[in-house]
Length: 231
Ligand code: A5P
Image (cartoon, rainbow, N blue to C red; front, side):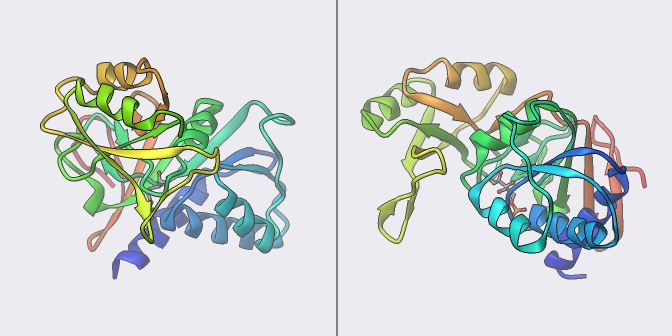
């Protein structure tokens, strides 16, 4: 199975967690998009759910596919959110935000009883930050000063750009992709990043994951906390 097939297989497994009447959070990214497509098939088959999208992109996909949408204003408590991730450590802590949607993703995850993460096995790491920089969403005003403050926390921040221009999030902010030599205590770092003036939110998701569904050449598995594997 190629990587895209693996992502779809993980998303299909996540669909088994969906029950009629649920209020869902819809993640952002290529794996989450598979989930939205598969969910839409079930909706066309008569499944009744409502969903909150975590980005403008996911909102467009869901609308196009006929998934009934709501907002956190109308529906502030959700049963289940299904989302992708950029890195997963053995304790199921995550780096997210490769697609720039980390702020709405974290708000929606925090509003959900259950947070199910769907990935291919290339996302598994021994330690967060091993391969992926931590995306940090910052307000545009004074972003260089915010970057300097993040450097004092040990980060090497780089302004995210697309086509030579600063990437702007759905919330109108910039992203600083922050490499760290090592993140010794991810929980503490999540807090310290957010205490930095100018930071809106960061892509460390610590202690939020309920379940990780990992797809690989060998098939689809539920990953237990601690890093062992069981199907
Ligand atoms: C979006 O902001 C991210 O948090 C995504 O969930 C993450 O980048 C995973 O995306 P893929 O499923 O495309 O790898």
